[in-house]
Amino acid sequence: MYATVVVRVEHAKYTMDVEDRVKALGYSAFSINDLLARAKTAFILLDIVLGLIGSIALVVSSHLLPDVESTCEHVVVLDKGNVVAQGPISTLKGKAGRVFELRVKGGDERHFADVLRAEGIECHGELGEVMRVFVPEDAGSRRLFQLAAQHGMQVRHLRPSVPTLEDVFAHAVGEDL
Image (tube, rainbow, N blue to C red; front, side, top):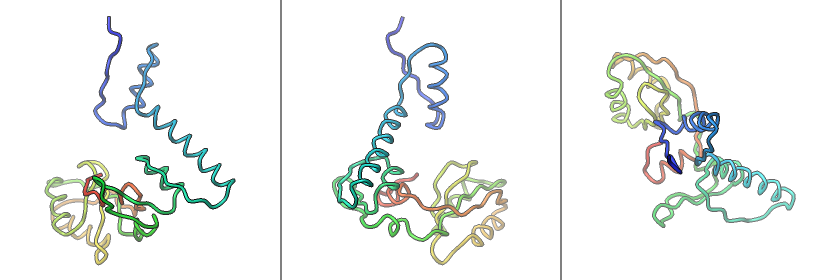
C-alpha cells in the first residue's frame, strides 16, 4: 500500500483531466492547478481592492503572467537578476498583426519551421499543431503563403493573434513558448 503516488502527464493540458479522473476514483489529488486557482482568486481580489482605493503604485512579483497582464499597466522583466525588458505592457507587446496562428500540412514540417526561422520568422509551438509565428515588420501573412507554396506545404489555418505578456517574457529571456 502506498501513502503517495505521483502521476505524470504527457502534456500540461492533460493535468485537469487526469486530476478529475483520480478524484472520481475516490482518491484525493493535488496539482499545480490548485495553487494557480488560489493565486488567480487572490489577483481578482487585489484588483477589486485597488479599484476601490483608486490609483496606487504597487510592486507585484509573479509568474502568473495572464493575471499580471490583466491587472498591471507597467512591467519589469528580470532574467537572472538583470532587467531584460521594462515599460508599459501595451508598448512591450508591440503592434498586433505581427503574430499569427499557423498550421501547415504536407511535406517536411520540421524543415518548414527551419525555413521560417531562416526568413527571420520566429516559430513557437509543436509541429503538427497550431504554431504561433512572429513575422518581421516588413513581412506579413502573404509571405507565409509564399514560403509554404515554395516548400510544398499547405496552409490549413492562419489567423492573426494578439501578442501576450508571456510572448514578451519568452522573447526577453530568449526562451521558446
